Amino acid sequence: MTGWGTKGILTIAALVFCGIVPNPAAAQLAGGGGDGGGAGTYALEDGERNLKFAGIPIPGYSEVLGFSLGIVGMAYYKMDRNDDELPPSSTGILGFYSENNSWVGMAFQKFHFARDEWRATAAFGTGSFKYQFNPSSAGPGFPDIFLDYTTVSDFVYLKGSRLTWNRLYLGAEALAWSAKVSIDPDLAQIPNEFYSSLGVNGEWDGRDHVMYPTSGTNTTVRYDFYDEALGSDRDFRKLNIKISSYTTLGDTTRVLAGRILSDAAFGDVPFSGQAILSGNQNLRGYANGRHRGDKLLTLETEYRWNFYGRWGAVGFAGVGFVGENWDSFSTGNALPAAGLGLRFRMIETYKINARIDYGWGQDDQAVYFSIGEAY
Image 1 (cartoon, rainbow, N blue to C red):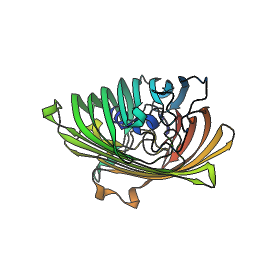
Image 2 (spheres, helix red, strand yellow):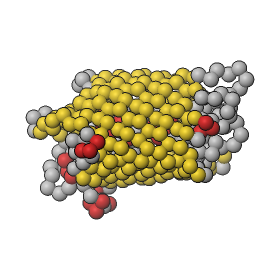
Image 3 (cartoon, rainbow, N blue to C red):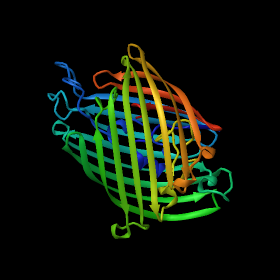
Image 4 (spheres, rainbow, N blue to C red):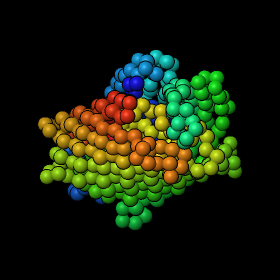
């Protein structure tokens, strides 16, 4: 089967819409500016316009979605244009519609304040998404087949963090969302449920740049509490950990990047609250949502080469594991992936790239159009 997609804005969007939403905010919403990378990293030239725009159409086709078309638009701007070390804030909107009547609409915002000592994020969206999943990910005894499912959902997400020491940011977040799930379509009906959480987050940001890191590391941790006391229909917990690293190979035109990602849910976890293997979020080469479970681990590395002017190319490879428990992971159920991609520098000042990636996995493949790097 051929899958279609782009990396989701953030884990929240993947949780609600199984990762269908594009990447553009991932680099901005998920992280920050690190140590700035030296004098003038985000400097504007005299007379240069502060407000900059980027947008791309996102066509696609898959056996499940049919023909599809999405569009994403981003605006980038500095809250203080005279602060050469302040990363740009960003505002974005996206829409998506497919032949099988799947659709998503979203808006999102990321602020960098006060020399990047404060960061704030907001996002909201709504949609109906029809795809497939494999019950065998739940463990032995479940059939190794793909079932159709539909998720109708909406959400709102708020997050804030402050630089506390060196490069360590600490903060809090809140998420409220609803989901109604239909499987195959009459095999199971999960009534509309409401989930709300409060959480804590931490980030060690040692990257030299927000949009296109060439050195340093970035580690993020999010822990969210869903509880009836907060109005949630179920009590469960979500823990997400991401570790990314970057280094140059000779000069800044050649960069080796790598990422380890763990996503885990505990307690009375709903179907739409499970971790999913998704090229939009964690491992390019698999159609979104086909492999899912309460526990997920992915490892991926990528070689980035700026070969001529604004043009670049990448090669990537990785492996993923999905299951109900950590001890279910083994080499026998590993999901390998690899792929190639092309880049074009849309906004030179902030090193913002448009990208297209083709990834292939185990009996699966996918194409990704997006703004910004995968991580």
